[in-house]
Length: 313
Image 1: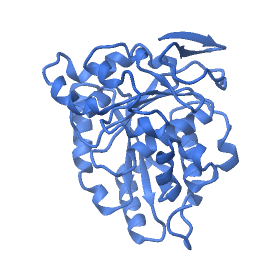
Image 2: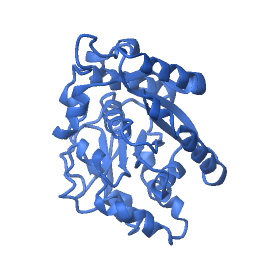
Image 3: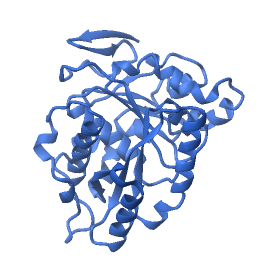
Image 4: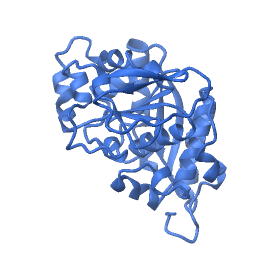
């Protein structure tokens, strides 16, 4: 893939760009290449939902985003509307085959959002990486050539603490931890923190926890409040003020291959992720506009569910 300049920005062009070129909002600042691993070894806590919807929300605020799908299930890939069955190449070819990552990048239907897709072959990648020299640094080396063409790179990690997740943590500047507002979500959190500390000591000295995101919150239950209180007591200011509610619309959106801001822009789920995008951008010092977010953005305290409903929108 080659790159073209649009105003002050570079963007990919070439045969791997599957969507028509779209104009990006110019924010007057150079891309930063901030890289974040979205990580939690427990499944079902909202990692992929957050990866897809935070990426799209940041793009809607005028930033250029790269989403890396590092989960063999490939849910982030299908969640942004890219068919896994029609892929010519994926992140597997980058990690195992050594192909340049710009040969793999796909343009999505969301303006400003590009994707490094995943496919089922990635399921065997950890075994194949075992005998590879500098196996923990494969993703970091690959991203080095493109990360500074993007404002933010988000890596969707698999629900494990294996070599793929270690690659993501080694490549990242920081990690974002989605945490479901249920008791069992707290179990195993210490293992994740221990893994992050080990990667920091041995592979990536600059790695830090950028933020903890409370997901699937239901204000009708005391348990959600108790879990939120315990997490805030432990992580303090690292916990985002924005809380993502349980939402039927959020659950439906992936089946349509759309982020929530495209599928149900007026929903509470869309409002929560747009609010999160603004908070996230402010936290890392990233200038942003008010594009789609201005229409539906709500305070974090309002991003709950309808007490008379079923937890949806």
